[in-house]
Image (cartoon, rainbow, N blue to C red; front, side, top):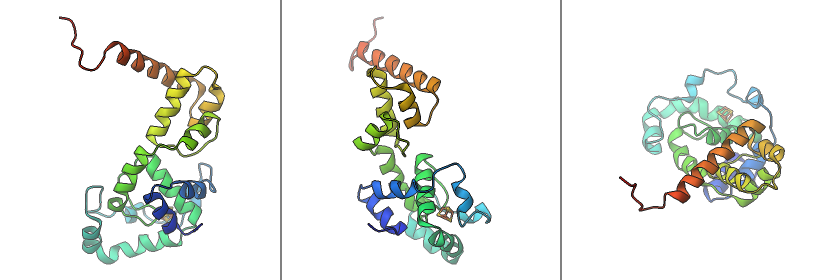
Length: 194
Ligand code: SF4
């Protein structure tokens, strides 16, 4: 398996997120960014004007030219695990802007959309057992749905898997059951009585 960040990104583009996530998990903890190579640089350098989720990456590169050299060079020299964590973090937060792991915001747009729709059964099953791993929006919703409908699951494990408190998990489950009950009593196509 390639440990080069571009190899991990390419695998993710092909639908295989596991190598990127495994690499990102090598730098757990809240302070991972302290070992980032951009740590002491002005963050503006990583948010170039004119780059954004709806721009064409090639046009952005042509128009910004050499001003991208510094941030891209810093990303290229960043430890692979830190760059992987940086990218996964941006995907989890659905961060639309800024350069991450050497990718412009415009280059990350497709990857962001794919991440949001990612549905990996292994990740869902792991979270239900209490494993802390990066989950997409779809996977988080699936974990809540299964917890809300399966009383045999451990609240402590699922809360750990989702990275939320026990109380918040119970609130999510309650909201899910409420939505589900509303959907059952209001079938598609039905009209409300006058
Ligand atoms: S990959 Fe780039 S943006 Fe991310 S932490 Fe490293 S230097 Fe900073």
